[in-house]
Image (cartoon, rainbow, N blue to C red):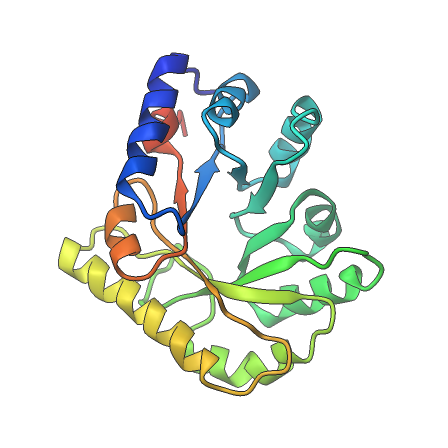
Length: 227
């Protein structure tokens, strides 16, 4: 697990916050980050933590249960057999990347008082390492997604392939914003895309310029992970 000096973490958070609009939500990505470091981030004003693995998130939430005003975001790939646990642990699920998992979440959420907030993960460029809807498939599935009564579909999540230039990143993020706006022009009963979850440590500034409303930062806050 990553452990950095408290002053360094606090300084990094302050610097990033000063460089970004207040309207953008900063999610601290805490995969392999120790709860002690997360408490430092909390003391510096972070209220959104993003995890990729169900098991890791579960024990961290137990360690940090006194931080009652934290919002937890699931960022990693979600298997259908872990959907129930994800609904218990997370208020936001960014990585809904296929109709099957959306359908499962909708079924399980029927008994919940608070409905999960969802981002649909999209694949705007070919990438064997990323999941998500390609644009034609998403348009085809939107009417089915709009029928899910127990999901609050609030945005899109986009992760660019590795190795893009700054201009290519800008084009990628702008395409995500364009797709979001195109979807919003249609008359949906339940889908309301107000959020764009995109931008990580190496490209968050470009993502913000292209319309990101949520950025997911890990390494730039806490240092390099071991894996």
